[in-house]
Length: 273
Image 1 (spheres, helix red, strand yellow):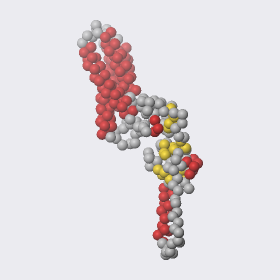
Image 2 (image 1 turned 90 degrees about the horizontal axis):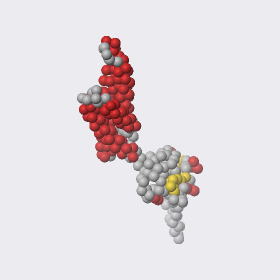
Image 3 (image 1 turned 180 degrees about the horizontal axis):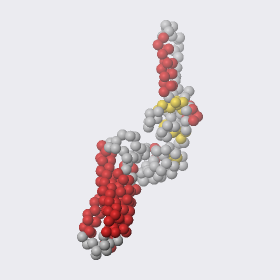
Image 4 (image 1 turned 120 degrees about the vertical axis):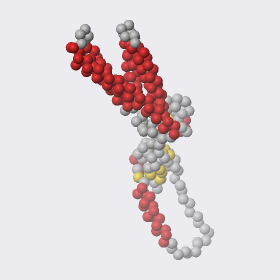
């Protein structure tokens, strides 16, 4: 008789063959490891004397209907229900994908799930990897708000700066021939190029791409280097560079810290609080 069981992760009703009683299996829908309970043996009580005949109870006829409804709600996977082996030779199921991995592993080699670095992280299945269930806690919302705010400010700063640089470059290219003693064409091309890069970085920052934060830090570092090289010709401009650099570093630090924490919790960075 098939054993009925429900997945604790997605709530899917499943059926497993009797041979899998007391073992573990993966849910075909979400991949969660589901323990299969031992088969229940129904015992029949036999009296010494046969009981007196009772009138038939018609209510029993409703049971098959209820059972039929129950069977319709559950999927019978039979032999296709994947079985998960018990822990052997220091191996346990990955809490994310269910594949057998080393008990002390810090990262699953099948799905890439980052696990706790402590050696007892997966011992005997007592700990579970964190997977985003779609529900945010108050702490999750706080982390998300800080991350989104930092990314929006960072993106807005570079979109604005990139737009200004592109406009300045176009003006220099248009008025270049009318400005004597100045290579306006070269400056205009450089300004447009820098503006396009800055604008692009800003857009990706607003889209919550964490990699662009590192690109912005490198870009800002190059800006500081060029400003120091040209400090003799433009000593007043160094003040603006310093202020902009401090703002960028502060926003980038917040974005990277919060983004890493959200990623560790399994929360997509594009999730709205």
